[in-house]
Length: 157
Image (cartoon, rainbow, N blue to C red; front, side, top):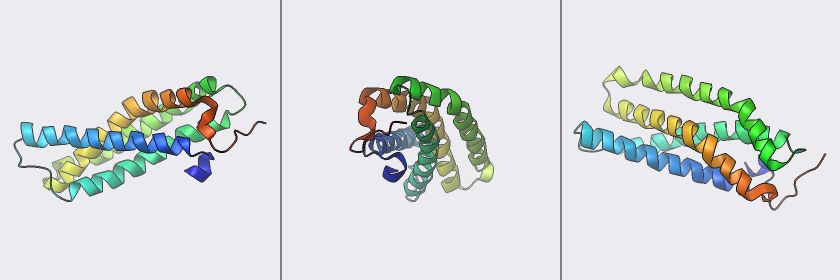
């Protein structure tokens, strides 16, 4: 991500958003499976697989958005992130909904590990696409402004 975005800052807040999404989806899933459904806990292998899937998908969606943001480097940062969100938001949301449906196909399997992984991934995808990508990432872009490309200079065309 450092090479793609030519930045050390952008990858840091993308990773922070993914970690926050992972822990939030794990927590909500733990509440669902333990407190509501009465299971003794999440299976030992589930956190690892859920982490790999959520981070991989989240990085993909973040790359779609931030790469489009970088295409608008000739306009002010605030306008650039808004334009990127307008052009990529529906594409990313559609991909997340379709992928959530794909993971939902694992829910009736009856295999608890698959059900847990699917639940965590679905919750994580929805959290990432409803909160992190439309709110957290643009907020961080706005806060950092032209420092988003630190230590590399923002290329002007």
